[in-house]
Length: 583
Image (cartoon, rainbow, N blue to C red; front, top):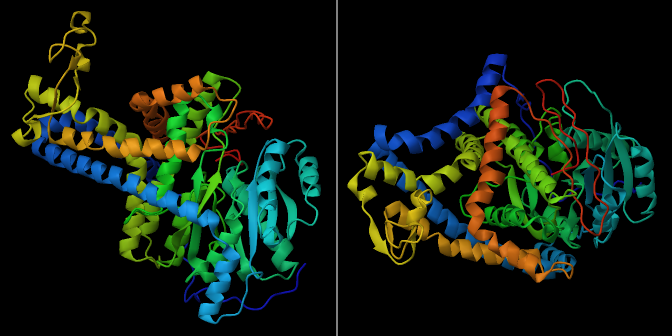
């Protein structure tokens, strides 16, 4: 073990009081059940408003729906512009010599050169992962220019047969590569825990604390901790950039660092319909790091100081969506200084890939439900916002709780608003007499092709042109319809960006397969319904009904790696069961 280094450049702010005790659950079963029903209630309220709003509150519906589509327009252009800026920054960060950049910083500031001082603890929670798949992740860590400053923790699940032998073989592959590499083994059946990524990481981090800090005498303040998915592939400069950011940050002990994550490792191998949601997820993540006013949350793979993680007593072991939850916990416990800063280097993750087309679609749906389980943070965020001892400002409390609520409610409801929120109310006004105001129902002639899906059930109308057929050579749009039509350009820009982030077409992917992927874009509405909105409603329904969530390991991999073995479903009555290692 290295000797204890000198003091850090900055130290965490002193605490003047004890941290507030933020309960993961409500103080009674009644309030817990009521809080868990809140996401579903809000989502169904927004969806149903499309059906009853034009009749019962026509002016309010017209104003709110128009306001939403103005937001949608601004959001669409903001995402496209932010993504363009983000991709340029990624390209620039890839070319940056971070050691030289730090030397220049030292020369300007007059501070001593502490480049070799930080240590970066990388925790890789995993369960039933293939050995070669884990080796791919560790290889990307070994390729770092600062690999000697990394401490790698293989956070294994003790209930996995052969876990100790697999961990021993992996550790033996990398002698002398890292500052340290070792395995921890999370016991099964600990009271108050939900088996999953968060509980596994918490166990691994505490075991690392005993090994490195208590027994090893190392300095907690020199460490960052990186939460790492078992399928992550890091850019070779990732930890050099993190080294620089940690050493030069104004508040290094109150900062999360978030890389730009793309589901790019095997995106060419998944079914064509899934390339749309998986590809656009990286575009949206990158954009959210740059859009002014956007509330940033750490996602999937992220880093923070070990000092901050230790202050809040690590991840809550009974929580499934550990990333956003940890950020909320830190913010509500430690105050306004807690923030998320971008790390503009790409990090590759695997898409779900099972041994069959339909099996992959089913597994992707299950993973989407798992991601949408983050709606469970909505009642937690509002309870924490109301905590009388939270040091967080009221503005920030409400901003964070409101952001979590908005994301998960719109996740379920926005498909209905965008696809039905103009068409159905217009028909209600024209055919059922809904008293919507004239400025909302008035239609303007604009260039384009109109369509009338209501005529699909009448074959005699299929080949007619005009309002009596399916296609019309002229588009007639009301004000919200024009706002949606103006979103077409940023959508095309995002499609181009998404194709660029995939990288070149591999030799084993035929041109016909590539073309099939492009032909999926007109079906975007259908695809996002089944793999975004419906899973979100499914998760919220389970949460509200108290059924809990049964997690299964998401099958992943690629042609270059052995596939992950499917995990057997594990459930405990009315409780969510999570299997660690998937993202």
